[in-house]
Image (cartoon, rainbow, N blue to C red; front, top):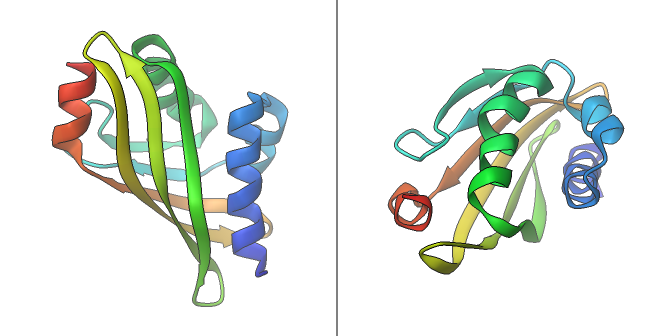
Length: 127
């Protein structure tokens, strides 16, 4: 397991546990890119902007949300990609939406996170 794959796996564990201290340690000054066209699309810097524009709105819009990777693979010497599914439920019903998350890790922290997903499915799920 590369350092980047371990760090990315730790991110999913911290998110699932809602462990803010672990998220802060892993994200710090991250450049976080949510897919354009999606309900939370944009580029955010640092955990506070990510929490305000991504984590918070998802928590408001989606019940029983999870982002679970099926596999995490090393990419180059400092990167990793996770392939998996977002799952949850909104007023439109339950959903399962595929994602790919590409990260670059520096010094044991995620320096850059980029989300690739079907933004149309997200818009249908959350309105």
